[in-house]
Length: 149
Image (cartoon, rainbow, N blue to C red):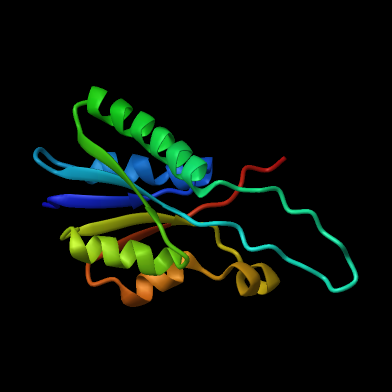
């Protein structure tokens, strides 16, 4: 029996598919924590292209993430689950997930993976792989794919 399940989310419907598994594995007394890492976007700049980057307020991003997660957590509570939400500001998403899981004695991390490969994986990295390599608790990775257009 798991006592504490961590579900990292990024705001996408694909990531939210992990909630189905979390609900299926959570037994009475289990805490489900919905978690998001907020980080400022890194601009991609070419020397020959001038680029105007919109000003991004990290506090607004943090607030939006918290509102999003709290809404999902409230829905879980209405279904009878013990659920809460937490947001952190960090540059390295996988590291933040692993550190949170360790600090909060998480028994299981349930995360979707977008299955990126090639250049996309090189540019964006693989959060799932980073968590898999460094987490000290079991991890349930759910491979997802976008619905066909």
